[in-house]
Amino acid sequence: MEISELDGRNRNDVALDLYVGVVLKKDQVSGEITDGIITKILTNSKFHPHGIKVQLDTGEVGRVKVIYDED
Image (cartoon, rainbow, N blue to C red; front, side, top):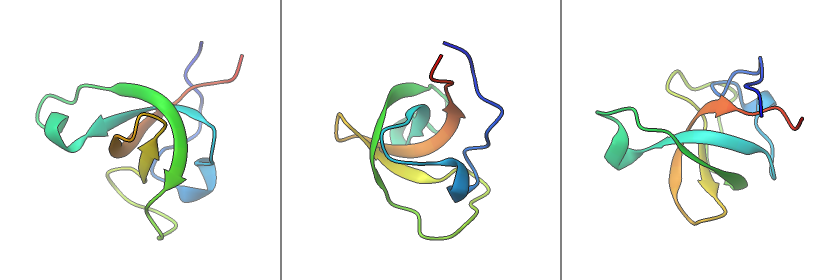
């Protein structure tokens, strides 16, 4: 799976059912990425400098850092 050119800071690039990598609140210092599928978009603004906040299929909440290509 490859990393997409899309930017996780723009809400237009983030959609339900996308496979993404997020940084959870507890991992902000280390920057550890947690992968999952978006089930809910929590940020209302069109842009957020630290990434759009989403909820994954695991129930975890984090900010999108990586959007993976579907290929």
